[in-house]
Length: 445
Image (cartoon, rainbow, N blue to C red):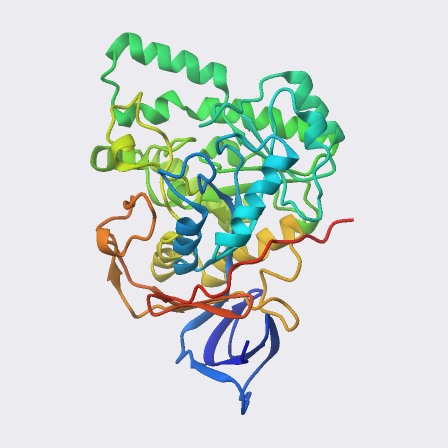
């Protein structure tokens, strides 16, 4: 690849904003500094835009294989690149569920051919595949995913001995969806008795309640601490759960960590009346006080990572009544623009956004040479213009499902350019698909 010289950028990295140029040579950042010149490089004038390390999304559902009527690795990775997400980690509840090493490798082969972003895939856990799980290569696979509560596939792990053995025997990071199935089932029956099939979407946070989340999360955290497991709790949605996590030690030394998702930071139960099934997620979007508490925990470092839980469904699926409408929604294209609204409103600094979406996923998952703007690191870079407003419409949505919970939302910031391992993959709304993303690798002994 011809060298690329990014000039006049506001570089955001490791808690600082500095005016700088960046010279890219091949796949890597070659030089960072003021007044860099090159006779051979293609010059990209940032003209004062923010330059951030590409976001690393540690939780997406790209639906391939088996559910490609909803999404594909190609379509969703393309939307991610347009949204400034340069690497993703995809979940195992595809069809068939990713419960064998052969099925896991098949997903890597699909991504190698079709993904525009860098990629990794979780190995899934069931009640009876622990031996297969323990074969997972920790240098080439991001982690192990366990559903300790209802899932969208058939991957609920409710055998206590399986969970105990997983936590005690694995050397890899275990990521978990934590909601208590017994509590949820009891709540569903209670609401069905009262309302029949006419349950309102506004009742979703009462059915998948604060208690259901806390019972499962607190039990899992206790088990992880008992066994010294490296344990990551996904999509924290309640104020109650934030008390489970610690900010007194550095992330690299933490054994128990947590993630917040954009939709739990943006929406609340006050939005169900307008949005209905389009903000039906598991765990549920809850009260404004929960939303505020989750943001506070992000800001004070009890919650370590911000992700999307991108999980698209078709419009026809989402237009069903409450009990039949699936949970989940698409987010990778709009996550950073949404967080930039928080930045422009003074709710979070851009340095903290970069920390939670780029630096911390790289530290937590021990990703090799990504997540930072450093010489010798892969050139995964994103330019953001905070003076270029746009509105989300059907016409500019890139998800295969063709809808977004952010439709008609006006964002004040635009992602103008995305570089993937030195390749200028996205510029001014257009894509260069001549090179694909790379498999993530990990610094693990």
